[in-house]
Image (cartoon, rainbow, N blue to C red; front, side, top):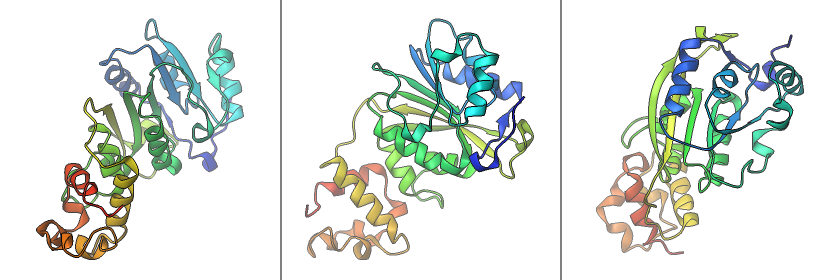
Length: 251
């Protein structure tokens, strides 16, 4: 047996229909290597291990769950990495897909870690608190469109797949969950530099209630700031608008 640890945000998925849907969405794209983040008690793991001809690994920070999984699945000692996803090195030398019921308390950090690995990770199927899933997939002009949306969508096409009710978990969380698919873009965004894009986006949204003319006045010349685009607020700009602006930045 095992215990559930609130400190780790553990809400284990038990709904077989949802588990099957996640596995089905994952296998729509062929792949060789797979990393599961936070297998917990192994409900999703059981489905993933049935996918034929793949190299599978899982990362789990909870030592109690690591012991449980090693007893539950034959040969699991060689497949599990006992540490935090945020602290681990890349588990494969070749490209790999990522899947997981991501802990809500570090879900945004998980997405940014995936961005660090973007060249090696073509597809992610992840379950998040619905609010985070919607932010990742949101479009310009919506209330939840922000830094996370613009940075993730620079590198991945993000598709909101389906909702997951609290009753699908043990124990039930107090919020709805959502599953998204990230598919790496085949054509890179045309930016001055990755650093310039990140600085521009974070600066623009840091004062999102202000027009870009006020929020970005340190990044552009007074003459450039007369352009009509600077009358807008950050949430109105697409990733392509931000990318184009990077080429006009001072540095």
